[in-house]
Image (cartoon, rainbow, N blue to C red; front, top):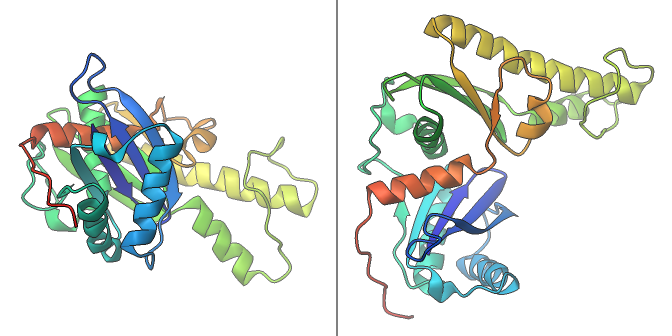
Length: 268
């Protein structure tokens, strides 16, 4: 099996793909855990092994590991986890990897690994032109041309950290559950906040998408992924697809494009 890890600022998502049996390419299991920058290799290792065990799986079934990370302090820790608990050297999404996608930005090395992975998966699955909106700690917008070129994008504060900033700076406003209110015109402080956060954020997302599509000069398929994708997409005028596994599937695609025999390390 292939173990794919998408390491974000808030969460790390793990996906386990079958490679060689009659169900090759199938996602056998997936988990979402909190990203801890200070957690040790052993703490991560115990967590990962327990996840496998609870799902009736063995770490020995993993023959390859592919990692996308936007949290540099965690990367060396994960290398040790892979070598110590899986006895494998992981392949990271980093400069030098074969992507099959031209990256037409000023400095391709600055592009977040997860954004490139999302763009590759979206073009492979939906064609181009397309735009990926990833609702994570930050909300990212990534644009792919009809020819499969990464054109660029935008980054905005995520809905969660936008709400945190409001609650931190406004002493009389308490935290509320961020969800779609029944009406836009709220009748109490809770619904006022929910309306402003929810519809305000949809306005941000649709406003950026509207301008991106106009700049492209053609219609584009818009794919949403990330933790809040389903919640926000409900009222968006532009989002047409929701793909919860987009990043993990992109890691599988990249693995296939770079696949070589990767020997196990000696047990420590």
